[in-house]
Image (cartoon, rainbow, N blue to C red):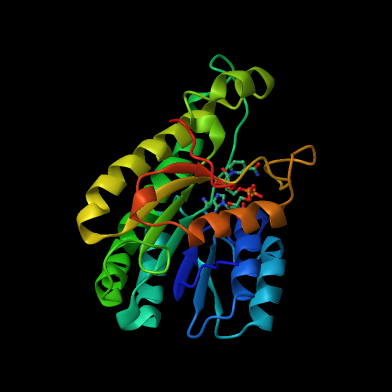
Length: 258
Ligand code: NDP
């Protein structure tokens, strides 16, 4: 089976849910010199116990990094700490996974709900992408091979099908997550624009929907478990080339309409 062979990988929101499972699956892939920078906002808190345990089992591979995507200082500090560990290889793969959802419709949602979700899901990914871009550039240059891939230099924005203007109607009648949907639609636009900016440097950028997944966010009634979702996302990521640059896909590899 194809696997993501990227050497240096950074994942935000890696202490639980999809982010943690991604670290779990990636650490099982045999890959020399791999470093996984598993970022979370509270590395020492009980909610990061599982990640700390996993990191203990894989010393030297999993590096637990403090990073709150809404706190620019924390992101800059993380970039400063991670930089020297990346060295000349740079950062091959950035997964903007951290996210949060607030329910409500256009009438019940508050300004604060809108700002909080926007700050995390849209601005958060913007700050992380901006601060780690120099390392992605280093990786793209260091690779010495033409084309695009997750093994060379890539940004994966974990999006959602409810950010799709074409797909959201039916889902919104069942689950009203107005602030969340709007913030993720902004993330989708950021994906498209960042892809345009990054094309000349051959840094792949795309948006990936993980499915409706049983996590704290997805709830128990969700359709699939984290293993299936992350297994699917990694399979999709392993096959990405310049043909999917700027794409919007789901964990099965299906292209989604914007
Ligand atoms: P969870 O709620 O299980 O986990 C969310 C993760 O994001 C946690 O690690 C959380 O950290 C982290 N996070 C939240 N805010 C911040 C912040 N300010 N800084 C750093 N980390 C933060 O969600 P999922 O694992 O289900 O979701 C992961 C991604 O997948 C999200 O972007 C979500 O929108 C997307 N998604 C999920 C779907 C699902 O069905 N589950 C469907 C479609 C998309 P902490 O523990 O500190 O709160």
